[in-house]
Image 1 (cartoon, rainbow over the protein chains, first blue to last red):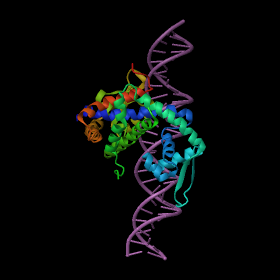
Image 2 (cartoon, each protein chain N blue to C red; image 1 turned 90 degrees about the vertical axis):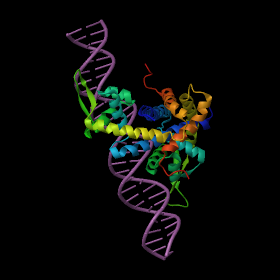
Image 3 (cartoon, rainbow over the protein chains, first blue to last red; image 1 turned 45 degrees about the vertical axis):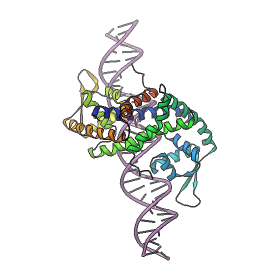
Image 4 (cartoon, protein in one colour; image 1 turned 60 degrees about the horizontal axis):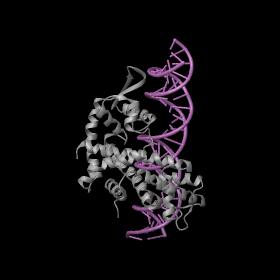
Length: 147
Length: 147
DNA sequence: CGGATAATGTTATGCGCATAACTAACTTGT
DNA sequence: ACAAGTTAGTTATGCGCATAACATTATCCG
């Protein structure tokens, strides 16, 4: 691959990150959320209560990031944390009623963001997009390789 | 679009951002660079000396971000800043010799990162990828619409 | 001209993310 | 049963990014 093409690709990924995140931030702001927090709430909604280490794994970010995110979402009342019964080190995190109500609104925002993002693309391209992006992600993923 | 697909897409974009940036960080670290700085150096190499406002536009980030990045890159000796002759508000930024030498190494890293990222994809998919990502980016770009 | 408006850049502050260093608690091996 | 190693979580710190508020300089217009 020549440098021009490589640069176009890397830069396109960088700019997509910036813009998609900025757009998500704008949509989430009216809900009092910052981008990243929605991922945590959606994960709890998908998979139910879990421990912070599991959240870290599911979200693909490091434990200290989870510590701060959970602290803030607890402060805003959307999640609760309680000691795990069988492991005194661990904290079980789960959605509160307020958190569940918020998830319903996030889901709507999430649908419209995805539609906005893929405007003008063929149905087929849109259908293949998540898999394509996951391939790219796995290619550069240096976290412990898939089991 | 149903929520599952929308969520898969948004999450894929978020994870690609995290992983691609992390991989770039790992590659750039031996050069003493943090991700984001390479974009500034490459832009100066592409387009020559320019003012910070133009850098802000070219990089797609806000002026305060450029202030900090230029300050750090100046401190490490890769760029220089001098007052613009015709406008006392502005600073002209340009590569130093050290910066130019670094760009040569960045270009190599950049090629191998792009190849790593697109491993296993068809040549055609790889060729179309930058344009596809740019479409997505433009779709969610809320900065001043293209002129 | 000269006053309003726009543009350049900076500081202050805050968020998500990271790594490093640490404590506390669980698990394993002999 | 206990030392050694592992795992869960936190604190401290630093980076890139953002917005808001501000000072300085340019420009535009009546």
